[in-house]
Picture (cartoon, rainbow, N blue to C red):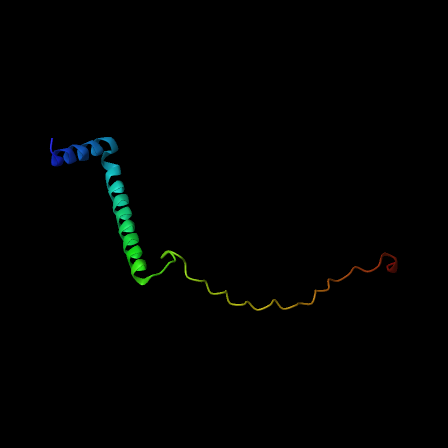
Length: 89
């Protein structure tokens, strides 16, 4: 068997093993992985050219959050107090 024949047999075997519903999902996953791999290779190549020693995926520094105004002090509300027990007749 030649290389082309083996590839056809492999494709048919995958189709039989995984079924028609899984094939598009698997192809999508392989495509995403290939794209991420290619992107990583390009970023690594750019880093080598620019002489950067830090990884390209390092997150940029995060700016501090703006200060929130301090909560204003409120006076406690005075609830009406019941009259003393001995004052009523």
